Length: 430
Image 1 (cartoon, rainbow, N blue to C red):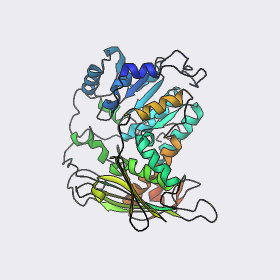
Image 2 (cartoon, rainbow, N blue to C red):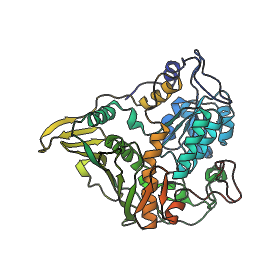
Image 3 (cartoon, helix red, strand yellow):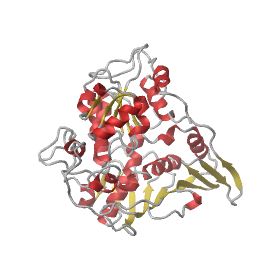
Image 4 (tube, rainbow, N blue to C red):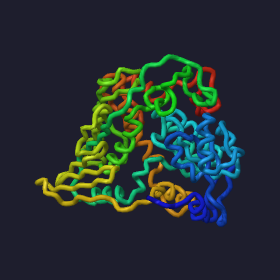
């Protein structure tokens, strides 16, 4: 693990390349200046970034105060309205670690304010918002990194390079999984929100729903209005490096997914069990299709390959098993062991380091928005197929569902009636 402190990180990332582009209100990062981060979202994931931030934002005053105290951030640099942070010329970049329904709206606003953006996975709550964020980033000419940090791990990058160099021949299929034993969120009724939470801000541009205790703080993952289920949550990592290793730089043409609540009897709306398959059209004449599958079970500790998450890649000359848990195995065409490896010491801030290097113009992004869009689309399409109960045909060029109005509607979302200041432009409710 890295021993890099907040102070040394800011010092080492401070020297920026003259002329690095910060459009609109943000200034060019000068050669003697630091990259100054604002953190939006002080929950479980946000706390891992607290030591990097100079300002904090969260509608929960308790979480905001706790992180400010542990990170040594003065009360004048904390806020509940992200617009204050985006208006602050002292902030060069923001890290967005909010619930899913705020990811794209906050990132779009940050782009429009000229801030560079590190946005946690999944990059969007729905397919349409991914496209809107892509356009916003292109217009603003800012750097946007997706929080799929496996793309900056040398262990994973080296394994993917082996695949692309033909270590197991031509890779035709990948099988990813997320298997774990989660807790029930129970059954609750509407109730007044806690006094320390600005619930109106927490809901933001999403369709209004009254407060319910099992809709906040991690439980939001399991509600259609706020989350993407575990396919978009933990599954976002496996889907991403499965597609990366499979070598498909496109969207799928066919989607089949089935699942439901097989185990939990509670309020959560997303499935606890799912099996999903995606087919990719041949990349060019003479090429072959590719297939990516994903399995999810949230009620078991009986893991494939004795690992709760991972990907198996199947090639014409062997098989590779790769897991973000630090496991890599390669076998040949007769299942003979070729490689069994574990990572050495790794830099926990490698993905942030890459983000800063990209801002300074010193390196390409490891997880750019286009890759985020293509990977997170798999979660959105799988969730839609499960909800409508049928397979989907998808036009990967036009980026739209073919011949299924119900599924097409699930590619976007319903925003708050009457409008909200964070609703993406062009998507305001009538």
